[in-house]
Image (cartoon, rainbow, N blue to C red):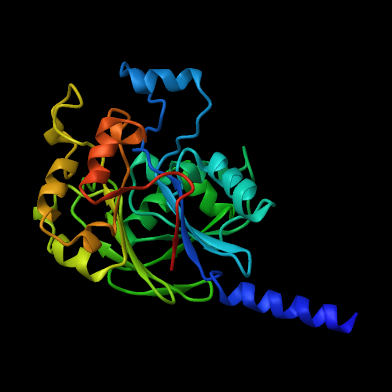
Length: 304
């Protein structure tokens, strides 16, 4: 009996040592309005009204499998489905995040906070990490202000270029990026683990507007989850200058001279419902992969 117990302890230790560090877990890769998209006429999108395939709005979790904890990036309109997905695929029980980081005040990134309110979960002081302008927006505008007033959420103010520490081995650093800042700042996040580091940029206007060099950053980081809202400018019947993003064809061209090793660090995320990169079987997905890049999909795990 004692021998069996020792073997169990040994195997448990090996389990923890081997492959049980924190990891990124992708919980969605779609642009703010989700899939299927309201009023969509695009066939790929329309078909999703009649299917049960899971496409969620862009979000990632950082999972600590040993201590059964996680932090979340973005509170999306698909939040209930995403927490259920974590329960089903990872934890086998319902767990709230230790904290949530929000990039900015566009609907796909913070509207899920509504589910912590009285009408839904009625949670108690879920930690929400936001930059100063976003913090003020949530505290002074209903219905979000009620979540603060009755302690459904706890606003934790963070600042650009100041690191905070989470779980066992994770540090998070918000970096300012240019975007349509109507109600808040917009952040990218450096996520640094015990062994590897990632850069999460779901929204940015254009690479050339940024003070940082994306080519250099690809060489510095192990994983980069980059804005892929539109593949090209022909996808939508709107003035695309009103909703600027780096087109995927621009990003591919910009990074094309990097080594295959560096290009393989890039995971495109935050795709509009018109972007056929969402369809893993599409010619466009195959082309992007053939160029040496990756496409982030639901359930993708990246070890930190």
